Length: 511
Image (cartoon, rainbow, N blue to C red; front, top):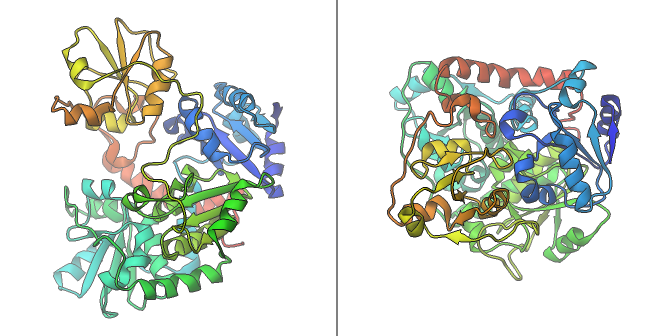
């Protein structure tokens, strides 16, 4: 492990060889200022993330932080588990900024910036909220498709919209919109998923008029219109009747962007090679993935993979292997990844032929201990127990065991009496409990507590906004200044293209 100067890291980024930049801070802290290609790997979850983000032990890795010393701890951990080319950026992001390099705020910056680039590059048509409202009032032949995941759609959407996450759009549009005369409007919460959803349909050759809703639900509400809340309208599950047409369209887009087709046998051989970092990702919907996927492949739903690539891919210069059932969603996602990051992308033609694994993805984390557990019923009957909740701060606000304390692993204060730790992630719960002498883990977490019919509390103000170090607050997450935050967020997205150009480390479209 060595320390390197900002100029050295800048040169390594430009060189184009394998490189991962891992930021050791919590994601809320990361969002307040980081390097363009940095990927969050917070100390609290390092055992669960590091190996997935870094599939090859010989990859060059640079650990960064905000100058607090977290990077050195992450680097020491990586070295201890066998990574051989690990470095720390001297002075962290403050030192990077001090020599004149660009520091970016926000999260998923490469993906967000790519969306803005795509709009400029392809000339994506958009309409503002007043135009859309006029279209609705004129009873125009049109559909509104919300390209976000269902959990975001339920919170708020444009009235009448149908939930079709971005990775499903090109796959299902033939069934959803069979007539070429129908206008298709794509929306999200802000800008880039609207843009990428609309542009995916355009790149696939869908003949309809396709527009993005400018500034999404934020723009809609800022214009004085009301969002719909609590609805779950979505596409029909299963293989669409128009799947053959979708394959034809996706094949042309993928081929034009250098996506390569391989067999499952060849993919498994690539993943076993030690000479280059290779990721295996399944881009289907969550229920399809859980029903059966290639062993070891992580779930990365296609739209989110393109819009939040840093959740799954950390290594520049890596290979990415994508899987689904009939290659449509994989080809569409792969073509965009080629344009955004110039990764070498492969799509498996026969992904589901052979042994499959069911259920959610399980991290390789041999450090996770198995500590004593307690059932929800037994915990409810105990007195004087302190319950520590390691869920995301936003999830704690939405629902938690009454009286429980929200915390981040590694930052848990001294607590009185016996302690029980809970988390939606059982691995994180056991890791957190191991830091507290005598602590136990709640079996099944909050989900099991709910299933047992036990009371659940919610409080939008706890933890307060300023304490949410694990979550970069979106405007809707805030308890004050929401309208100002919407304006700031939309301005931030629009300005990303200029900041990326000033930084100079992205090569969008230059695969």
